[in-house]
Length: 273
Ligand SMILES: NC(=O)c1ccc[n+]([C@@H]2O[C@H](COP(=O)([O-])OP(=O)(O)OC[C@H]3O[C@@H](n4cnc5c(N)ncnc54)[C@H](OP(=O)(O)O)[C@@H]3O)[C@@H](O)[C@H]2O)c1
Image 1 (cartoon, rainbow, N blue to C red):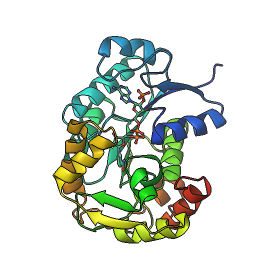
Image 2 (image 1 turned 90 degrees about the vertical axis):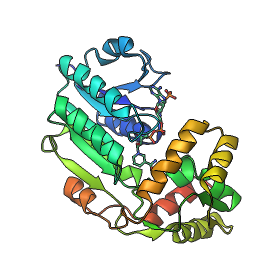
Image 3 (image 1 turned 30 degrees about the vertical axis):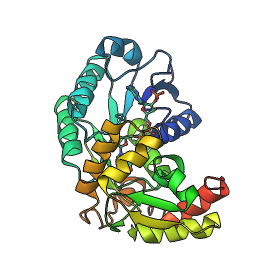
Image 4 (image 1 turned 120 degrees about the vertical axis):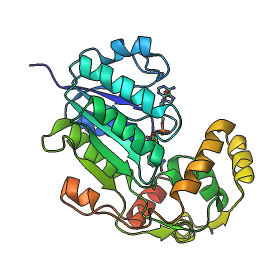
């Protein structure tokens, strides 16, 4: 019997890299779905999807740039329907907590793939070390267009492990997991912890949406993406997501990794040095 083959869309990104790595460790035949993959995968080129889905048993669905953005629900649900036609039996969708657009996308995918597992995540801790906020931590100021609200940042090690289990084990079909860290920290508290580990002070600075878009542009983020993120942050970072969930425990039977553990690992890996 051939090995199970799983397509990891966004397979070179923050979550997809981890999912691909853990699947490969389990002996799964991993196909990385990205524009640089073989065959290449492009969300905006449905004509090329069949080649990517050929012989695939399971799919990790990770949309770029964001599941809450306009057009995302249509793209992911069309792709999920195509995957079902190809005989895919397991699917895990990466989603965002407290986002109306992301919930619409979840519903659209579930309508064509009832056994979907949804990983509805709070803000990723790794945004501070691998993504949009890493330069700010290195420079000593994390600037976002939101007040200093509490957020239970989720560790991507947990998210990836849950995705891998959902794609390789029984018992996760049709489930919705709300995934957060074990407790909420404000951005200023998170910055203080990272500053201690990095060996230099890190402050939190609420900025205007225009200043955020301008700064993101200097970091190479297209204005339409930065503007979309500004709107998304205003929606989700208003305190609505402050309460932690036990979603990681539901899925893995153990507590979620905390922010201090993430900070220690990121610092040891040299993220901010
Ligand atoms: N950041 C957060 O705090 C947070 C919280 C909750 C949910 N989310 C969700 O997380 C998702 C992003 O996941 P991530 O952070 O793991 O990804 P990421 O690090 O932003 O990486 C994006 C991935 O998508 C691929 N990609 C980019 N453009 C593409 C295109 N046009 N067609 C096909 N593939 C493309 C990239 O590879 P190539 O460049 O090689 O194509 C890369 O593998 C979003 O849907 C967002 O809603 C994020």
